[in-house]
Image 1 (cartoon, rainbow, N blue to C red):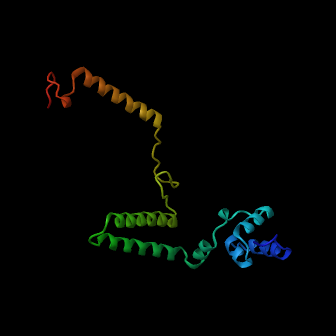
Image 2: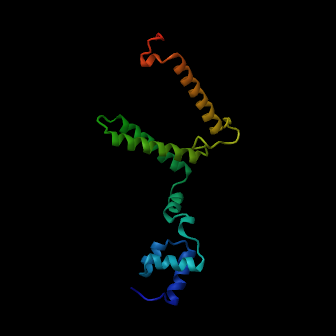
Image 3: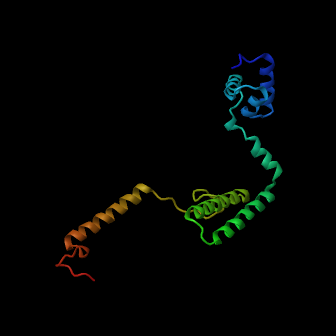
Amino acid sequence: MKGPLTSYEKQRIRTLLAESWSHNKISKELGRSQSTISDFAKREGFSPLPERTPHVANQARREFGKAERLELISLVFERGEEMLQKPGLTPREYKEVTTGIAIGIDKSRLEEGSPNSVHETRSGAMQLGTINLEEEFARLDALQEEEEENASEYGSPELGDPERPSN
């Protein structure tokens, strides 16, 4: 266990944080624990890492433009289709492939700027009415009560009531 941070280490941490280095990478660079780096960053007012875009994601964005990402997603769809055609696919493999395809669909919609959820809409898209769940449940409850009253009044053919003939 090392002692307190030296002036040099503090300045180096400030510089690396300003360059968007991760706390983990800084800790390896300086031979300090990640918690030491995180505590110092917090005291110095640097935003926590979850609010920053991870270095790997930025690198991927630089390496793959939108067209390339769409092409990769298309390749994933093709491979997924090939895998689904494979005989003897276990239920777990089927689930994993279909989950991957579903994620690919969401990613391609995001890349194309389309809504990726039933709850999302685009301007100019057909607007569906909203459902008031309280009113809908009250309506369904009333229907169920009416059916139960009719069943008790006339008997239930499913239960073999001899007074009411079944169709």
